[in-house]
Length: 169
Image (cartoon, rainbow, N blue to C red; front, top):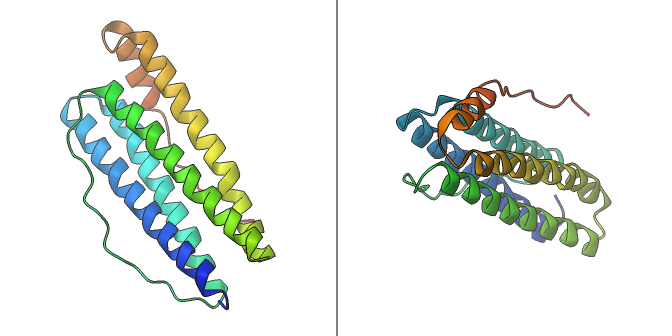
């Protein structure tokens, strides 16, 4: 990859995606621990999606002739103040990832790297979907008040989510 500035940003995003997977796996473990297996499943699927995203960056860097540089992944939080707190933090985290993604897109445009621009468009679209999905769960969770039959129904709904890797482009 001839553009070392962009290569560095892509490697940093690769690390951020791996951290996201690690964070969501920690959240999944938290939900399992408190007996919300549907929420745990939803977060585990989130973790798999983030791993998929990381590998897209990994493969792209290599495809462009760059060098993948893996760095340490920060330990994620392991305790929260309840399901609402977790899902609110997921939304905050996804907004941060959106900001990072937009930053790489801005860099690709500034560097006139059209291939990177096209590559990043997939992630821009994906982040719109990610934030929408989290907002949906957050809205439903708020409606339940975090207890009772509504919570049981939401947990059951979240247990049906599966990871489907997007078709090759």
